Image (tube, rainbow, N blue to C red; front, side):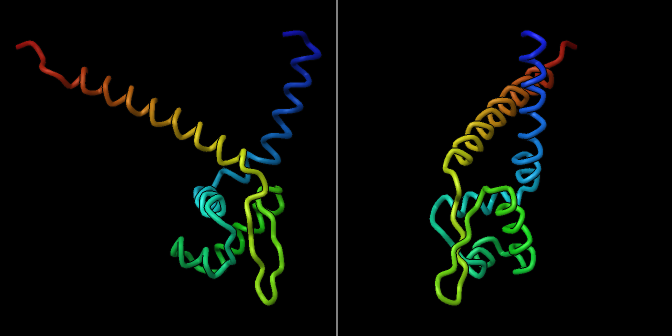
Amino acid sequence: MQADERARLAQELQHLHASVCSALSDPTRIAILYELADQPHNVSELTALLNLPQSSVSRHLKTLRDHRLAHAERQGANVVYSLADRRVITALDLLRQVLAESLAVNAALAEVLDGPHPA
């Protein structure tokens, strides 16, 4: 990789971290994104689905909106939230697959290491 490519990659990674990774750093926000992937919801619905206080859900939704991962649309007296880009869920699903495979390898290794020991 050339120096200019490295510099561009470093800049892209900083932007990625600032705009996406920090928004995904909380498991509650990821859970909200998965709920929004199923269908749009208002705060009350998300509060019930996730069994969380309204203030917590609202705070997390603000972060997701600020990072452009969720859209808010007023519908009468309610604000309905939706997923801004389905590719976020695709990326999260890929990361979950990587994690599951890594955990499976670690479990298999632990089983080998904890197996029968010579007397």
